[in-house]
Length: 459
Image (cartoon, rainbow, N blue to C red; front, side):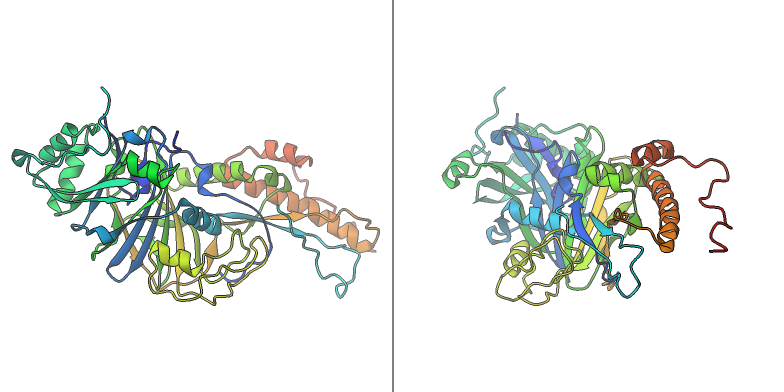
């Protein structure tokens, strides 16, 4: 079986609809764990490479089911030539996902009894009816339906048609005649794209080609075109949704950060200290935090999870992408020897190929038809400031400490741990009493603020 959800649409160009035939500055610290796209069900991925009017979109399918039942319909701005369509490897998107994922980092408190000169800080690394065969696409479009097959290609394991249509009912009827099960409500959405004079990219799996290529899972499809519009046709992906969907957009540009024009782009809370025990389930923490922030923001915003120059990272959840990987995604302007850099997982690194003029933005959208009634429209900004979803663990000193400074340290540690608990409760909506219990520290009573103010006055 192929891994996926019912929403390949969302991943793809925001995108179409997946139809079945009969988806700051240097931060320092040591990387412990990451919250990648695989944490979320029904999660789709799209890579957008944008340079002036040139756009390359990589659409990763999370489709689950028999390959002969897979089909994809995506609005595109023009009739695509065969050379504008490509099939790439999922491993590149997995690498980009890992590189941009929100991350957990850790620090270790130094010995409070060391002098300031001696205490260099001890940070430690922790690794932390049966459907027809997919090749049997009907080649004749009924004239009375106003549908024209503008082009037909086989690219990799996919049979691809480029369609134009005069009206949505005709297009819907044609798709149904070709064994696409069109969900209720698709016609009105299709009609809006037809009014914009958009074409329709239709892909099915060619089982013979898939077998000859030895492909196990469906690979991402890429399209390249020129258009003044920088957008993802999100609405078509909501038509057959049974609830909310997750979409991760990785935007690569020469200029800087990418943001939404018609929905608010909000930075997720970052650079906050949270309790040690979160390390045991960072993914669970991140999902709860995202749910809480999504609710607080009104459920109709685009969240920024990462914005950084591709040439380096700090701390690194994965190596920066190589030149060859960036070019494969569509960043045609990069040059170099194609090597990757660093060993990942540590402090900031830069690849030996040298800095690349590629700025990467990671956006996370949870959407449905009600909260996102419009397609996503983007713009490039000149902002090259660094940002990442970064969450901090500070491990207390556990060695011998019998000096006066140690008493002050442990008093402050108790207050710090309570602040961490309150932060975690605010981020996730979890009960403070439950967090304190899991931290195994006492719940402060009324007026309990730690040691009396006079305790160390006359040392």
